[in-house]
Length: 405
Image (cartoon, rainbow, N blue to C red; front, side, top):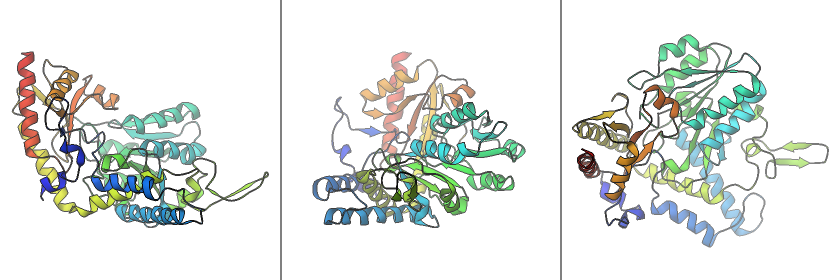
């Protein structure tokens, strides 16, 4: 794989940082950079073909309606969903989780029911369920995470009972970088007839996702973590579940007929897409999927696995550096601490070297509490990163360490 050729497609890397350094972007778990093809898709819409979609009978509206439908088909194929009807456009993974909480789960809940999540979850896959528990008198049951960063699968099997009305779990921890065994989890959930929602925000830029193979009931992701724009994402849901649910939101675009007495709603997925969609965002998502699919999936996964292993071995040469979790089932996400230096100080020093990392609790405070640390430094890689980036990271960390010693 020619990484220089891939990187050349991202215009942000053609400039220097304010400190005159080459930009080394290692915060891809938060959001990824955008290739020119994605930028062009958005610019072209606003500058040459701007219109709304759905009911216009003039050429830009017709063009964009066709393009939106094409993106829906791309997402369906990208996830290996059974039907385009299972693909609902949202404002992102967080928006999708909240919509499923309100529209799917809330109407089913009663006192004594249980919602199960894991100890590794991002706040976006915790707080909506926490709020439902407070509102309906249900219990939030939390899957423990082992010291290795893996979930306790024996605990899941023991506690997945019929009163668990939903299991919501991430495909990969945004802090530890450990992949969860989704096929194993959904197989256990099927025995208790527990619906499973997967937060796939962290995996789609570098790992294949097959919703039929996973047999999950819902899956959410955001475009901006896989080279697309912010403010757009997807809910995948099995057809029977999306059909039985009331609309996520109410308004224009989801109706067949309206009177002052009643409303007749569209079929799925349009039933769940009230209002004018983020058309530019959806078109950008389509371009991002095309970009990802132009890369060999196997080559991408192998390259990032090699890069992650190189980073792990390089970082471990630094005295006092501790990596959170184990090294098995690792995606390109590594969180660590260095004895005697606050993560925010490390991040600040690295910024002076042109290196972008994340420091803090990474919207996963309960997980950091489990490991008894207030914050960590997180580095996360994408297909435009290289071993040279990691070498410069290690040199900058040693320079930081020397300053504080």
